Length: 390
Image (cartoon, rainbow, N blue to C red; front, top):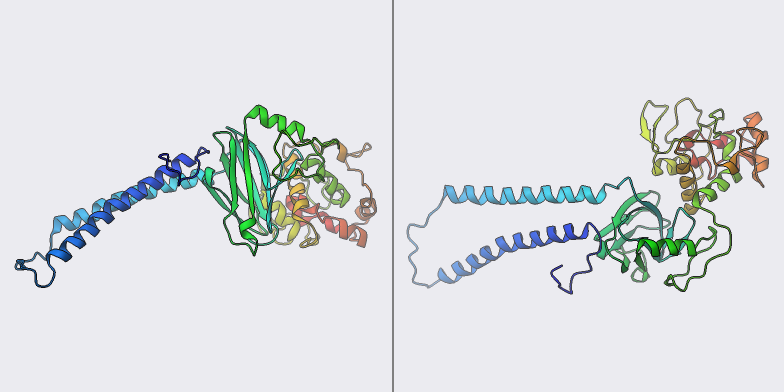
């Protein structure tokens, strides 16, 4: 701003508006502070003790001055309030279009997860001119995601998803900080946001197609990264495998005939609860349904799902959330989750034990109960009714 080196770069669609409002606030503060301070000094000198000044007939009231002094500051302050409120809503209203990136904060690093499967530590790659929606959560203490060049600073909380967004306006590398004291190595919780032209960003994605188990090395440039030869696995595909492995499909059948509700098309839709309330099936609802399934029980389903608090990682929760979001079109579950003989997903690996036996009996056998939803139930927004109990 104004070419002053003390200001960070302005590299997002919001940064110009934030800088303008900040400048206006500074100028208004000077507009009132300088005259008031000047008059204080002037009168202190003129009417100091011992000065030969006429002190008789001093005015004790001036109606016009008092009204002016109240009305003008009121108009200015309300104008600034309205301007700031509008900017606040622009900053915290997440656009519907754009790309999603998941952010995990932990002592003392940032992990970024892309729905297409890439993962990065302390480095975030984004394209220029495109809205980027961030879903943030902490695995330990409160952190704060702060990119000065974008003028965004957002708290990252344990146990709850928060969202932020930005649109970068010019390519470059920008600093990322944690702006909330989070422990002894807080000052070292640094990172970078690398903004690329759209074609360069697509080339970076193609170069770094990777299995979810791999992580792109910190602070490596796009030209030096080596493509991983393992088959690409998106977050939704990884979530589908977790969903199957944990036996969640036993209750959350695509046809809605299981002990828990179908999750197809549920994301982003209103859900009727047993207590007559209606809630939106967003990311926090899905997560809460896994961690505390009895908090919001879906209407017409029994509260049989066990809790999976401290039994499933935030990483797996994000995969399950992304998987459920991928079912939001109202179509059937992905092909790899469908049994060739019907609508039921095939049990795989250890989940096979949790599968059909529990389903037929409806009992919460030890095998079925433990796996039944750890991560999967969560998938169900309705997780409250979850698979765990079948």
